[in-house]
Length: 113
Image (cartoon, rainbow, N blue to C red; front, side):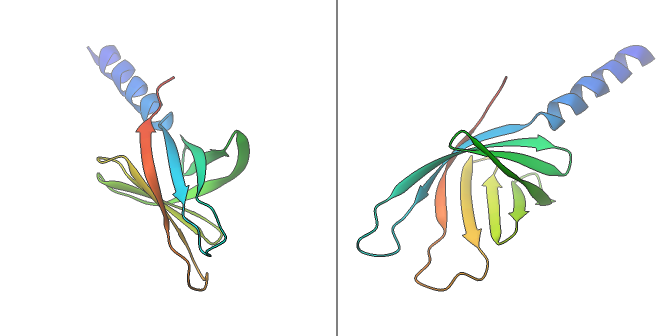
């Protein structure tokens, strides 16, 4: 019985650390001559960090700064990512960017290997 419980906990912890979100961000134009862009991001949990692959290119990872049952909050330099875990929505906010800046929003899905 003890062995089964330890095995179950091992599987549970492995599942938490392999958490992945595949997200599509819509980057709205900030000027009249701009066009709407779409970015695909894969966020993969690795302890207190989330590996980030943006449009098939690996980028610097995001640091996990807060997590609740409802959301995950990530930070990398001046970029803040918020993933709403229940609705599977994403928002990207920039710190210190002048107006007419608007946050980027999109949707996610949980990726299973």
